[in-house]
Image (cartoon, rainbow, N blue to C red):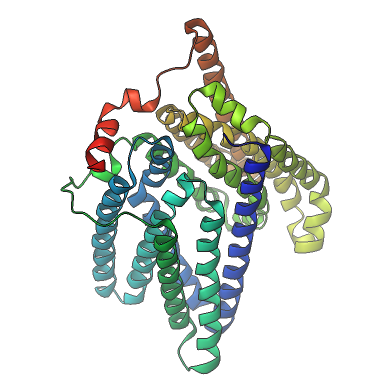
Length: 426
């Protein structure tokens, strides 16, 4: 079972890899954006955003569900790779449809870009799932960093040695970087020899509804700026969006911790054993909460130094967002714990409800109090989610104490998964 040093080290590896990956990508974006100009790059960024959204739609909880089931031994790697092939085939069909739709418009490259993002992210996310399930975080980090490093090096070479347009350079660099990452992921994961196993078209998404609702609800939170602009005006949207990403490093830390802990929680023989596996590493999250507190205290000074007096109102927004981020540090690992122990349906339903609460709150408060209303809607939604998840967790603890043990593991409640694992093992 994973100890404090193991989980802490895995979290740090994922945080460093994620930070390095984002830094390399930011350099690529800066190089291309400066050459392409705001209008052209803005259109390309919109296409990439559409592609990223479609990745979540096609995935619909498949990756997170597969990590849990592989870690717990309820499906085999052969079964997983067969399902991934079906998933990727659907992604290919979607990419072709997007491309054809783009060709029929005045901006055919829009469809090509969205299709590239859809295919590349689906493939990369898929090949690292077995590595994540086996807690081989160094290999996961290597795949993530390799993709961005190859992308950056190729972009620099093409910009320096060819007359190709900046956006063309970006597409080629992203494509080659993704190909390098997928190749590395396959080699490091050492998948079993391909064997054709007839499966239904919906096979990858069997029993993933809970995870799917959760991931789609989380993706929907990005609509807050759009709704704020529509109901409160572009100025308020600018005040909000200027600082809305300042808390992402803290939230990314919570995501890294949850990603590292999920396989260990799924493998545990009981919820009590799962809690024992992670509790010695919870001190890492305390550091993230302290960081949020420091951000609250330094918000007025930081906003003034970075953005200037024009964005003075953003300081109050940042303070509220930092408090909300501190709550996320609590509720995200709690959600991961419940999902990994087979309660993903409840987590998905609660997340859908609280995200709906947030977006409705943005619409209702945008007129009276503007950007700060959007921040308060975010904080209130995160607090509500934490209360719901904590109440459910306490209810489970009481139920287990009365019965003298844990609830049945997910494999018992979904016998088809166990049967599939035995059949695929062949």
